[in-house]
Image 1 (cartoon, one colour):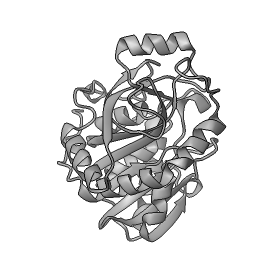
Image 2 (spheres, rainbow, N blue to C red):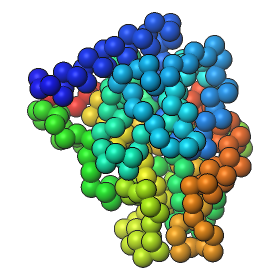
Image 3 (cartoon, one colour):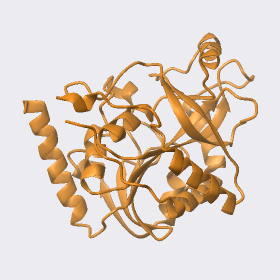
Image 4 (spheres, rainbow, N blue to C red):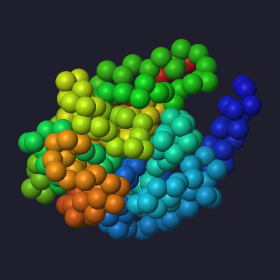
Length: 283
């Protein structure tokens, strides 16, 4: 084991011990992206741990991300809500969330729900729409699995977003009168927004939404054997598809306008999904 692996293992061990000391054994983990933090207010028996107190967790630098872990009960399920993520564009490191994802697997979580705010490439999915991620395009062609030893790094990404969890999410959303769309999410590095030419390219490649997160975490989760469900809150039409000027402030404002519906839908999904444990990647 090299020094990097030893440091990560020690950080994960220390973080897991602190989380277990809370008395909550989370069954479902959720990473809350922009516009999704409202669901944290629906958690009962909440225990908050700042990322700064968990050595395997990242330090955040983006508005709209609280930087804390909320443990408690949501929809009758013990949960761990990660209130924010570190994006690859902040440091150039696609593995920024590796320690946190490893902790979730070590804690025995049975599924990981990844949420984000994204731009829409599909006129049928206007701002305010919720989209289940059916697959992704790793446009950045970066991986969080550099320095991983053995054959486990060659992760099978077919059905990276669990079809079973997606079917359960659709059913759950209907109970709160919300229609979930489905589509392919394109991950771009950022932090700059895309050009209209890039959006035309992504459309030709089959993307329905575009954003700057989620894919590294999906790869990490699949490497750790965690089933994944991905949810995008579409906050704007992508560059060149409308007359609006894109900015992070605009993303946050639009996300806030849809926050209540997104939170209620996410709570219903967490209450309903029944993940089947996935086997970890081979060593």
